[in-house]
Amino acid sequence: MGTTRPSEQLPTASSVLIAQLARGMRRRFEDAVAPLGLRPRQLLALNHLRVRGPCPQQTMIDLLGVDASNVVGVLNDLEDAGLIVRRRDRADRRRGIIEIAPPAVQLLDELDRALERVDDDVLSALTSEERALLHALLTRATAGLVVDCAEPTDEAC
Image (cartoon, rainbow, N blue to C red; front, side, top):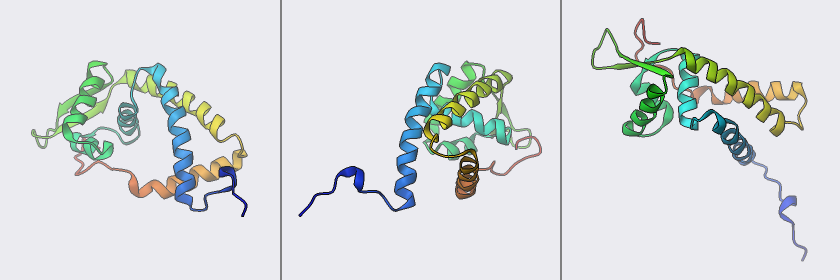
């Protein structure tokens, strides 16, 4: 009976292929962001604020998927670095609102360029049209996973 080499055992489930791609992307992502001095969770929080605007701290807890004390640590580091501003919600003084600070926008622009290089490296086997299609499909597939600002106020989200 012949044996099959691991390279011949191709995964057929999309979830397996996506997990493989995610592992490769994550390693390269972490290498790309390391020179910026930030951890992936910090960058996820900053990018969320750049795209969605100011949001309640609870939304950031939901987005990052970690307990509140860990999120507070992430936010403290970002605030100490001058990358976010925290304030109280005028409508509900118990609720903290997080906003992106101008220096973070420049940092995220640098990150965008670094991640374009990661995409170029990992997705080099795809044409530009295939990459655009992959991006569109992944955007649709992950739409339900995106956390929006909970209970937005006029100023918050």
